Length: 226
Image (cartoon, rainbow, N blue to C red; front, side, top):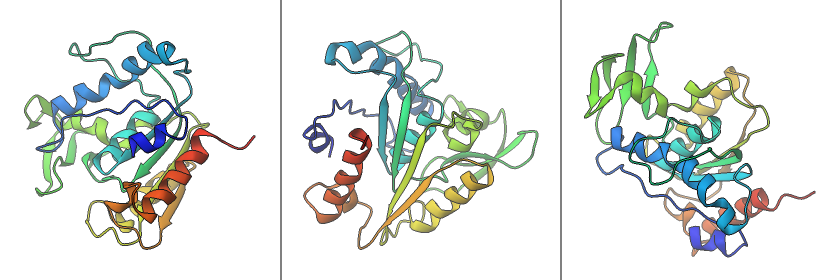
């Protein structure tokens, strides 16, 4: 899909990040490097780092939405290979996102959290300072919850795309709808697109009809009609 997007004429930065065993401190470190990397390399490709369109699938759908809502600005890890000013997102497309991952506060004081760091393990309740993964407290994991970024810039376009037959509990239309309801309750403008006949994998495969429809949607984001 990254190559197909590049074929539309976009400059694509395709990031890999640590998620093999779920979210972790390594995941957070990787994500914190994305904004500085784009900013440092944008001039090399003749693009504006303040006009970024973020696209993420599955766990990347949640992470991409979280990053975009923070204008790609997280405190950079000392493992980042590039440093400097951050970038800025103008739009984000979350595709089949795992919007229930990370930590969600159980009280107004943010002293206890419901934490889910892996889609194959049950959630746990933990205090803010309790370690829920190596090097990561429940409060740290809260950063993965896009809703923790509110309030946010009002000019960010948020699109939540999900396949009609995405049957994974954490990425299903029901999961996307729950996140959309939370955005609505917070007064955040967004769009939900449920793609008929699409599953979790084929929706990002450009060799499928569903993937081609996703590509068309991305093309509209990177080449908006004046």
